[in-house]
Image (cartoon, rainbow, N blue to C red; front, side, top):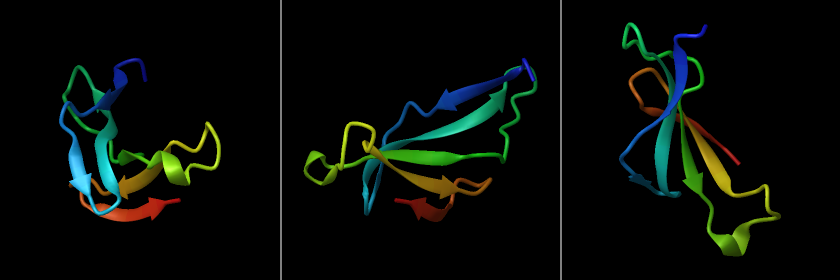
Length: 72
């Protein structure tokens, strides 16, 4: 467990929902990326946020980083 780190892409990606970065878990020793909880965090426009905790949409991604759904 101690070899796995939460990572964030250095590149921003544009989607129909807005722009975001990919978040995933990577084993630092082996370089393997976990299929568990790969997602893109997309910042919501300020005008539609409900409160201070409602900043992002979460787009779930598969192991090949293809979108599988969006959490709203």
